[in-house]
Image (cartoon, rainbow, N blue to C red; front, side):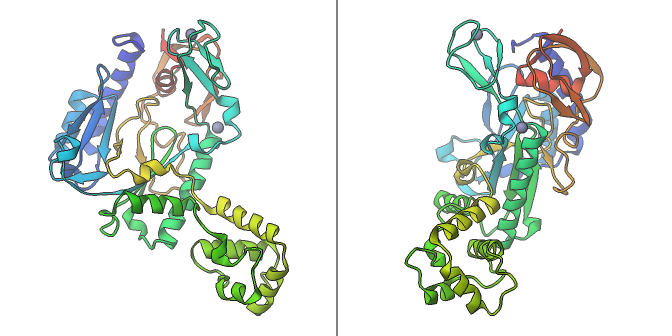
Length: 385
Ligand SMILES: [Zn+2]
Ligand SMILES: [Zn+2]
């Protein structure tokens, strides 16, 4: 998108309307003055290492600047405006990112598109090595999430919350869940117990919630297992943690739930083939683990999109999910108005927003509500006519 073109001007106008109306009532994360703030303007590149003493200073900034995107640090610093090495790290929220990109949903084959950064042509399907039109190799995959992808991300977020609350004992009121504004969910834990842990410990937590590194030996399921070992290590009915989840899954799948006492159950398990037990254990790990991006969790200096601000590619808000079950990412974070606007759209997948479906469009001029136009412009499919 060229600076000063009609589409950029339209997008900025729409963002301005939103910030004029809503910035005054936005809430930000606790300890705002200790966090680094960065933003990308509509014209120019990213500015980092800013800090705002109070929420109202930041609200004023949003109204005055109308940024294309705004980010905050999960970390807290003594001097957030200094270069990284001199900031004085004091701690960080424990954060998790669940992105539809990492979920490999089968529908991605239907809606994957690419755009050539040299000639702007768009292609359907997986990104080839060169542009079919201008033969240049500078192609970018357009990231797209349909309602099925977003549902899948919500499912993983629910699993993550279960693990954080049940296995780590984190109180639910110390956890906030947000829709990221585009492709998934952010989970932030604000806890005295976890704020000062280092990168290694965060990386271990990321592995744990992803079900990585669980040794089947811990359940004595190896081929050399003995009845007594199994009796000692196999979890009680409804046991806790990964051991409990895997144990329950094995018991349920082998139909041993109604059998008592435990010795009988163990004797049945010890007679089951090792490969069957291994498959069941691996099943349980993939069924109940949360597919998070581990690099986000382990990074103690991460910057994330700021809650209440708009996503640069969708115009949707990063929104707190008060009730994740009923949260609808295709309507709840839509804050741009519905005034119709004429755009030319090419090769866009069907877009579900506000209980309507827009497209698929192929090289056509259409008049659609501003909220849908902004998303198609932001992703690179549309231009204002
Ligand atoms: Zn091209
Ligand atoms: Zn999808």
